[in-house]
Amino acid sequence: MFKIMILPLFFITLLFHGCDAIPVLNVKNEPIKYRLDTSKVKQAIENGITEKGWVSKAIRAGEIEATIGHNNTKLFAKVKITYDDRTYNINYLDSRNFHYKDGKIDTQYNTWVSNLRKSINYFLYKSSQGIVPVKSIENSVEQMQEASTSTSGYIYNFHQATTIQVDSFALIIGISRYKQNTPVEYADASALAFAELANKTFGLPKENIITLINDEATSGQIKAKFEMIKELAEKSGNIYIYYAGHGVPGKNGDAYILPYDMSADAIYLEENLKIDTIYKKLATLNTNKVFVFMDSCFSGRDDKGGLLYRGVAPVLKTKKISLNEKKLVLLTAGKSTDFANDFKDKGQRMFSYYLINELSSGKKSLNEIYPELKRKVKRASILKGLGYKQIPQIYGDSKSKLY
Image 1 (cartoon, helix red, strand yellow):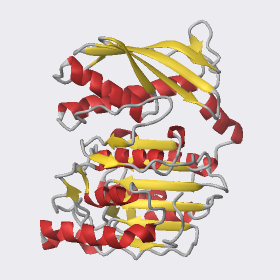
Image 2 (spheres, rainbow, N blue to C red):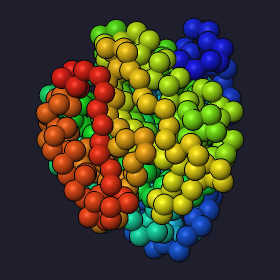
Image 3 (cartoon, rainbow, N blue to C red):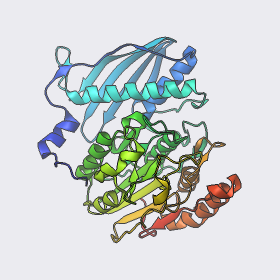
Image 4 (cartoon, rainbow, N blue to C red):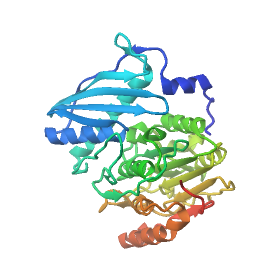
C-alpha cells in the first residue's frame, strides 16, 4: 500500500483490542450548536448510533441506551445517552472483554465512543441543514429494516444479503466539506448510502466497514486506513473502496484524490495519494478481488465549473488510467476530463445515486448494471447542460462477482 512504515503485528492487534487501561471516556454536556427541538436531537442521535454500528433503545424521554457487540472479537459495550435541546451526554454502563476496572478501560472502547460522538455531531449538523431523514433509521439486534433511508432522505430499497461476508472489508470516504477548498455537494451523503449498501446488500458486517466522512478524511487518516485495509485483507474475501470528493490533476499531470486538510495546488507533493500509486498498491493485496468506485472527476473543476487552483488549466488532460492487474476492478464516475455532477433532486452525487440504485437490486456483477448505469448518468448529466456531460467508465474484469 502506501509508502509508510509497516505497523508491527502486535500494534495492529492492540489497535483492535485495546492496550493499557486509561480513564473511561464519558462525554459530558456536549453542546448542541444548532437550534433544534428535542425530537430532531433524538433523531440525529439515533442516526449517529446506527451509522457507527450501535443499536439504540429508547428508555424514556431524553434517554437512550446504545449497545454494540462484535461477535468475532467477543467485545461488547453499553452506554447511556441523555439529551435535551442544548446538550447531550454519553456515559459508560457496561462492557465485556474491555478489562474495565475502577473507571479505567481499554483504549478501543474510548475509540468507539469518540467515533460515536463524531457521528452524532455530524447528524446534528445535517439536521440543522434540513437534510436528515424525516424518519430515523431503525435498527435491531437481529436485522436492519429492508428499506433504508440515506442521509438525504431518499429511500433505497436494499436487497438483503443472504450470506455474511466476514472475510471482506470496505473503506468508504466521502468529503463534502473541505478545510481549504470548495465543497463537493452530497459526497458525504452518498458515502453513507454506499456504506448501507455494503452492509445490507453485499453482506459486510458493520465492523468490517471503515468510513471517513468530511473532517475525518485527513491525509494521515486516509493513508492509515489504507494500511489497515492491507492488514485486514483475507485471501478468501474481497476489498471494496469507495471515494466521493475532489479529484485533482497535479502540476505533473498525474491525478490525485484530495483529502480534507490539503490544498489542491499542493497535492502533487503527496505521492501516496496519487491515483496510479493507489491502484497499483491495491492490486497487490492478498485478497480475492478489489472493487474500486470513484465518484470524482479529475478535470480540475469544482461542482460549479470553477478551477480548483490557478494554473490547473494546462493539465486538465490527466494521464490515462492503466490497469494491468486482473485483481482490480474499477468503476469511475466519468473519463478523466468529464465533469462529476451532484444530483440535487436526490440529495446525492449523480453517479453514486444511479450506482447504488442499480446495485441495491441484488445484481452481483458490474457488467450487469453498467449499460443501464452508463445510459442514465449520461442522459441526466447532459440534461444539466452539455458542459456537464459525464460517462461512467469501467476497467478490469467486470464479470467478477461482487459478493
